[in-house]
Image (cartoon, rainbow, N blue to C red; front, top):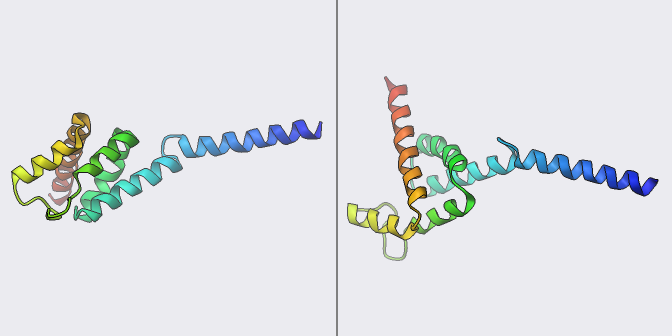
Length: 120
């Protein structure tokens, strides 16, 4: 009987922890949004823009898509920020995930528009 209660208690604790981590706005999502925001900041996206984009991208993209976006980071010999349209397009082609790129463009546009409206 004691063993059964232990197993039941363990199941409740594990289930509660999984719910807390995986639910909407759960720990996993918050960590992912924070990591996306930090990656944007590391790539010199202004802080207000990164704060806006991080949670939105974490909501819209899978972990594998977020990892695919990492392929757009500068490689040896490239500047931190693309210096030409051609260089920006070459980085986007490295991502090889059209949906991920579309979401980045949509989120960036939406955040830019939101920031513009707040200034008015």
